[in-house]
Length: 56
Image (cartoon, rainbow, N blue to C red; front, side):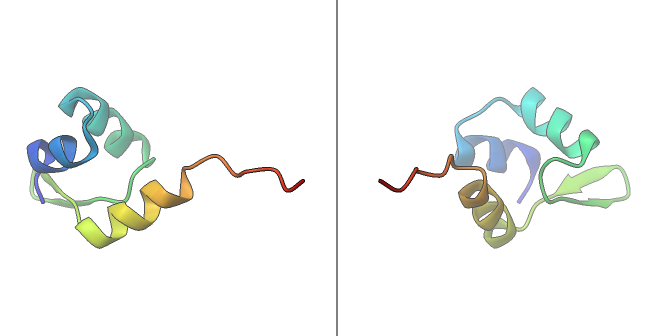
């Protein structure tokens, strides 16, 4: 997926996707001068970012 596609999928700005990609926060590959995202890897990453519930 391209930056625009992953930003739409995650419902966040393209600028934030670029920032995260440059900082290594989100799983991404760079091919030439273009960022590419694997949807399954991003889904797994997004799920790992959720706050954990405290057990009561």
